[in-house]
Amino acid sequence: MEKLSALEIKKAKPKDKTYKLADGGGLYLQISPDGGMYWRYQYRFLGKQKSLALGVYPEISLKAARKAHKDARLKLADNIDPSEARRQEKLARTEAQANSFEAVAQEWLVRQQVAPETDKKNRWLMETFAFPYIGHRPIADISPRELLDVLRRVESTGKLETAQRLKTKCGQVFRHAIIEGKAEIDPTASLRGALKSPKVKHRAAITDPSRLGKLLRDMQASTAGPVVKTALLLTPILFQRPGEIRQMEWSEINWEEQRWEIPADKMKMRHPHIVPLPQQAMALLQDIHLFTGRGKYVFPSQRGASRCLSENGVRVALRDMGYGNDDVTPHGFRATARTILDEVLGYRIEWIEHQLAHAVKDPNGTAYNRTSFLSQRTKMMQEWANYLDALRDGKQFERAGTTPETQYSLSCESTEKENGNLKKDGKKSFTALFSNYASQEKPTSD
Image 1 (cartoon, helix red, strand yellow):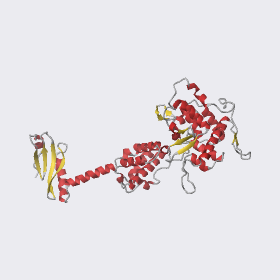
Image 2 (cartoon, one colour):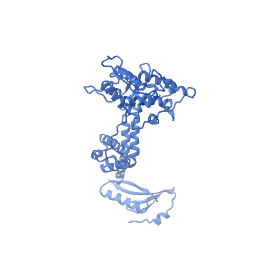
Image 3 (spheres, rainbow, N blue to C red):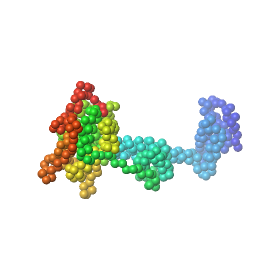
Image 4 (tube, one colour):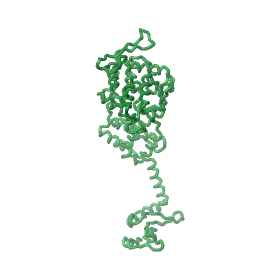
């Protein structure tokens, strides 16, 4: 029988010792000398006296305490220990938190062996578009419909490629959860065709020799600062990924062997990569070393030498020269090199692909190591740089070591005006580029 009333509880005052106000059926309010008031349910289970905490008064009212008491008694009637049931519920909540989509995604992100730039993009994708909506949800409880709502929220803003990329990354998180026993299905498998397909955009690249020669002359005449200009001029010569070029470190330059040795953790394919450095690249690096050689990065950021050049540095320089993203992009120089080395200079595809750091395998399916075809690639890179010089200078390019029948005679039309800034021999000393900066403090910015 219920004995307590709200008024009686309100009038209750602390005493020298802890005391109880019984409400019946084992429910009571415990009042401590310090004034604390706690609801308790005292019961017996399997012959043992037990006590279940039901909350603090007044946060838990008399009515709420009676409801909790009733729920506990119903469990007891079903031969369930209320205290053990609460422990299991708490454990389930803890496990649900540990197995939330965000927790599992963070675990997946840590285990991914990707380049820092890729990791940064993956985290941004999850933190911006997924975690705010399903991050708290137990990953095993997320349905295809719930995930689709998240994806369509992105799609509705017109970001079709981002929505597709988010779906792909979410699928990788769910498959990781399945492997770890934290989920049973991958809801993305049920969403094939559910999103609009974005139009495929190829990175703009110039593969016509005449247009390329014009671009190279414009690059030579660029008024960008030393750091950006050096990165700009090296980009077509080395044709590596833009992120790899701007993150180039002085410790990676092997001056004696004349090559750039990129560690695996910086590469998209997670394999170390060697880039032979032609004489033109060596000259550019030697000149910029006077300005940034004391720091970590070959191309430090204007925000501080501890950071590398921003991803927009070279892109903005091209834009300032009048070349938009529809004309050429830093990444597009890779397509330029691949096309011309293959179709014009006639180099073997596997040499080119290896130099591009693409996944190349031999006929047995074994990936070539980083030194595969190194001597051939070294010659190819020097000849490629010579070819670019010829295009830039409007000269004929004669391939060394060939017979007249197989000799390449490639020319690029140019005008006196276009070549006004070039020396008669077509080779402008790059050191002259920095002459205007000689009297200034040596920059370490982009």
